[in-house]
Every structure is written in C-alpha cells, then in structure tokens.
Length: 618
Image (cartoon, rainbow, N blue to C red; front, side, top):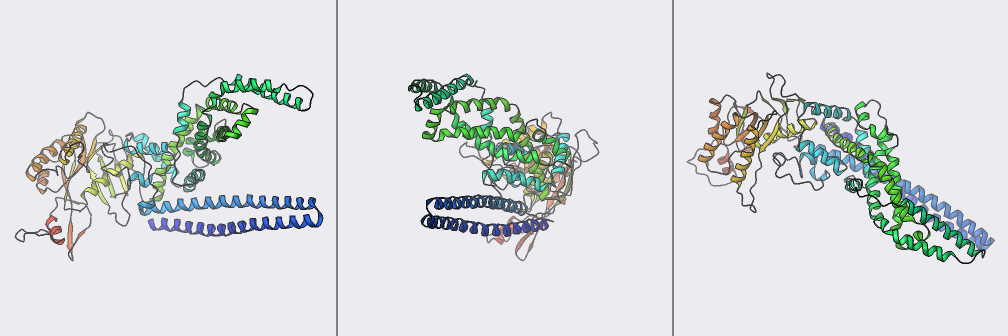
C-alpha cells in the first residue's frame, strides 16, 4: 500500500517534470522572441524613418513597443505557471518524504517553545527534529502549528471532542486536492512551500487599544486647502489673478507638518500588514470559492468565509490596497512631492483606522477558524498518507467496566519506516494493570514504550493511529524514558530520574477522574544493582496501588517474580538470537519473563575481553 502511494506521487512528479520542461522551452522561446522583437522593431523604425520620414518611424516604434509589451505580458504569465508547477512538484516530493520517513527532505519545523520540562513530549519524540510533529505538521501559519502542537502536548481528554475531530478528519482525509491547493495558495504568495504565515503583526495591530487620532476633520481641511492651492496656481498661471497661492500653500504646509506625526508610523505598520494579509487573502479567496457539496462538516467549519455578508478576501484586499498606497512613504522624494500636493499620508492613515474598526471583530474569528482548519488538515493528511492506520475508539471513563482500559492490535511505531516497523498486540485489561517488560539490550523495550505513548497521543488528538484496531479510555500520560542530567544545575542523572519518578507517582495518586498511563524505561538505572532492586520493588508496589495503568521496562530479571504476588503485574518480554556471529532481533512482544540476556554476548562479539569462566547465555 505504501509503495502504491509512492508510485502515484512519482507519476504525478514525472508529469510535472514533463510540463516544466515544456514550459521552460517555451520560456526560452519567449525570451528570444522579446530580443528579436526589440531588434526588428528598432531596425524597422530606423529604416522607415529614413525612407518615409519621422512620422512613419515613430509609428513603427510604437507598434514594436506594443508587440514587445505583449510578449512581456505573455512571458510573465508563463513564468507564473512555471513557479506554480515548481511549487506543486516540491509539494508532491514532500509527500513522498513523509511516507518514506526521509527526514532531511521533510520541511523543518520553525523554532518551537521549549518542551524539556513537559511530562512526556521529549520522552516520546513529539517535538523537534525527527519527531511526530515534524512528520505530520503541514500547517502554513505559526498559529496553526501552535494549535496542532497543543492538541498533542495538552490533549483534551474528552471523548466527544475527540469524536468530533475524528469526524472532520474522516471527511477531510480523501480531499487531497483541497489540502494541496490550500498549501499552494499560501506558497505562491510566499514563493516557498516551507514558508509560514506570521500573523503576529496583524493580531498586534488589531489588539492595540490605543485610541486612533481623529483625522477625518484634518483630512477634510487639508484636502480643501490642497484643492484651493491647485485652483489658485491655475488662475495665477493663466494671469487671471495675482500669485496668491504661496500664502495658501504655506498655510497648508504648516497645518500638514503640525499633524503629520499622526501618520509617521504608517508605512512600517502598513508594510507589515500588506505582507501578512496577502498570504491569508490568497487562502481565503480559495475557501470562499470552493464548492462544499458532499462535505457538510467542512462547509460548516468554513462558513465564516463563504457565508459572510462581506467576503473576507475583499475586506483584506481593501486593507492591502490601503497599505500599498501608504508605500509612497518608502520613496522620500516621491512621498514629499505627493504630500505637498495632497494630504496623502493622513488620508490613508485615516482609512486604515476606519478599516481596523470595521474588521476588528471578524478578522480574529477568520484567523482562528483558519488555525483550526490547518490543524485538522494536518491530521487528515497524515491519515491520507497512511490509509492502513485506523481512527481509534475512545470510550468515556465511566463506560462498561468489563471492557479493557486499552486494547490494540497491530500496534506499530509511527516514526519508523514501514520496512523497519514490527507491530504487536497489547492490552491493559483493567485499571491497576502494569506490564513489566524485560529483554536484552536493543531488543525493543524502549521503542515499544514510545510506540504505546505516541499512539495514545495520536488517539487523543483525533488522528489515525498506527494499528489495525485500537480502543481506549481517556488516560493522562506521564513518562520517564529519556531523563538527562544537568551540569549547569548540578543535577546528576540519578537525581533527575528520582525527581521525574516522584512527579509521576504524584500524578498517579492525584484525585483525578481520568486515570493515568505511565511509561517507565529502565527504572533507577543510575544506581547500583542492590539499591536499584530494592527501590524498584517498592516503587512498583506503589504504582499498582495508583489510579491508572502503565508499562515498565527493566533489565532486572529479579523483578519478574513480583507477578507471582501482585495480580495486576503481567510479564512480557522481547528476545533475540545469535546467527553467524550477529545479534538478531525480531521485536515481537511475548508474554512471560525474558529467558535470555545478551550483554556479555555483545561484549564478546565486539571484541571486548570476557571471562570465559562466566557462562554467556544466548
């Protein structure tokens, strides 16, 4: 199934390559045609001028210029098509990279907020490079990315909310062309499929409650004086009246300079707005004109765009035009001349304030709806690329207590390539259950813990999970997998682990209606064997008395005996074999304790000294 998807995208890329090659050939012809048009037109104009006079020469020059401008217009349209096809091709290549887990080819995430203190983000590779968000984040705005990120890092453990998101994902999943066109609209404005819309300046402008200066009266007064200047200049030029215009112009200049400070920051503000809103305007224009037949949920979500009394794209176009007109300030000489004739800056500052008041209520709602659509599109695209993944069943905590807390079939790690992924069945039958997972080094214990955690994060975000069947109740997540020490803070690895385990135990013992799911890898690895065993036994007993379920991996085979006295503890293991001098792992989770260890075998295979008197179990 994966290869079939890849082949589809490769065929699409091949077609785009052929079109691009054809368009590039046409572009070269247009470039040569423009040069020929200039040379022929100039030569013909000179020839006609010598043979028939200046008039014919000027006429031929005009014809040549018109032909040249026509070719330029056609060539520019062709260049726009080349840009569009290039961006479209890049988009399809990115789809293949996400399918094949080709991380360098997947657009990098922008700088993210620090999540090192989060209770499971770092442990489960949710953020950063080669993470779950890196894999499925297709958002084009910082706000859309933040919305998607919050669904994974601060999940809303409400089955109804999750089901609503799943319904949107189910409807959006087959709409690949819709999602790609949205991405292309934004990329065409930015010129890059990896660019993100920075809406901060727009929101800051809208949220600025500073009362705008009252400019309407000043614009009317200065506009009247500007008209008076023109009339007096014209009459004086015709010698109908004396030169009175310098007095009116001086009055105009004094009043204008007195009030000009109100428009001094206009250009900077307008330039930021123009750049930010142009990206969103292109997207809104597509959403307004898209036909929503057969997609009732999408139509409902996008109703603020296509059902609005005033089309959002037109409202943004007005602001963009005002901002563009304010760009006259960028040229000091032109700006001086224009404002000497009319109160240009004050007028457009006034117009910008008027439009700010007009869209102050609507624009934040449009932006928020766009964030929601972007985040849902990212989940839907993830499901589209992985049609073998399933939308999980998330039941309320108060549902039938005889049903398992969590049950999964064919559970796999979503960040691994499909060729390297091994899927397993797993379940927590009831609250209080704990899976004690033993196994040798590199056998797959840590990967399985992350597999379980990542799929729970996907499930609670409303996304498809890497499984053939998956049902669960809402569970709070807390992990202790990738603990690190801190030299600057003077914290050892062991102390950092103890602090994390204390946090986890408090979360488990908290009086919360939603149970906790804990995932712990190699408990107390930072201390000696004797103390680790004593501490581990006590901590595991405390875990089984808490309100939740969880899995704990360990090398300590002595801990497997706890299952004999604690009914809620269930042993599982991963195993390995040695073939032709190499360790071979099958990564299949099996019931019961691990019958083998491999540390000394690995040491021997790598040429380290091993005491032959010590038996090596393999």
